[in-house]
Length: 287
Ligand SMILES: C[S@@+](CC[C@H](N)C(=O)[O-])C[C@H]1O[C@@H](n2cnc3c(N)ncnc32)[C@H](O)[C@@H]1O
Image 1 (cartoon, rainbow, N blue to C red):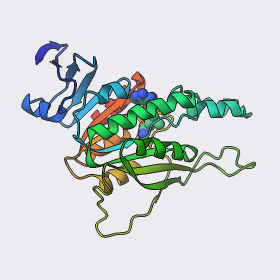
Image 2: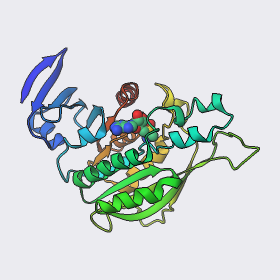
Image 3: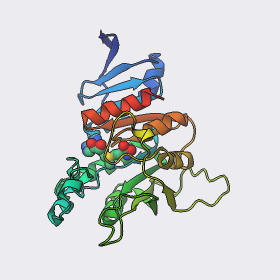
Image 4: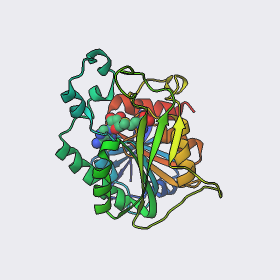
C-alpha cells in the first residue's frame, strides 16, 4: 500500500475502487499530509491531519473512491447553472456581471448536460450516504423542481425547501426591481424519512438570515459565491453529530470544511478548480 515519498509527502497507492478512507488512515496511522491514490479511478486524496481529505478534480470521479454507506451528511452548494440563462438576458450591466457567478465559468452547461451531471451526483450521493443520512443542497429557486425530481429518482426523501436571506445584498438595479437577497436550500433524507436533527427541543425555522460573507472570512482569497461560516455551521450543528463524516463535493473556497473541522466532524471535500482548491486547503490550514 505505501508506495513512496515525494518531497516529504507519503504516497499510498490502493487498488480498491471504494475505500473507507478514514479507517484506512487510522489503520496506517496517517496523521499528517499524505496522498491516497486510487489505481482504478486515477484520483488522489490529500489529507490534512487525520480528519480531513481533499480532492482536486471532478467530484464524480472522487465520489466513486468513497465506500458505500460511510458518509453521514452531504452539505453542498453545486453550480446552479444559471450562466447561460443570465447571458441570454443580455442586460446592460456588462461590467458588473463580470464579477458575478454568470462569468465564473463553472455555471454555463446546457440544461440537459447539467441535469445529467446532477443525476450522477445524486446516484453517488445515495450510494455513499448511510441509510438515514442527510443531503442539504443549496439551489436557485427556479431549479428546485428539477432537483427534487432527480433526487427522488435516487431514493431521497424530500423534507423541506428553505430560504437563506442575505441582510446586506448587492443593491444591483435597486431602482428597477426587487433586489435579489435570497437563495434556497433543499433538505433530503437518504432512503428513509428522518435522520439526525439536533434541535434541542427548540423550534427551528426553514429560514435563516445572515450577512454576506465578511472580508475577514475572505482574507486568504476570493471566491465569487463563498458562503458565510455562520450559515454552514447552522446546518452542520443541526444535521450531524461530532465525529460524523461530512462531504462537500463542490467545496469552492472550503467553507463546509472549515466549519466541519471547527465542530469536530470528519470532512471530505472536492473542488474542480485548482485555485479554489488551494484556497480551501489554505483556509483549513489557517485555523
Ligand atoms: C457555488 S460554488 C461553492 C461555494 C462554496 N459553498 C463556498 O462556500 O465557497 C461551486 C463550486 O463547485 C465547483 N465545481 C463545479 N463543478 C464541479 C465538479 N464537477 N466537481 C467538483 N467541483 C465542481 C466550482 O469550481 C465552484 O467552486
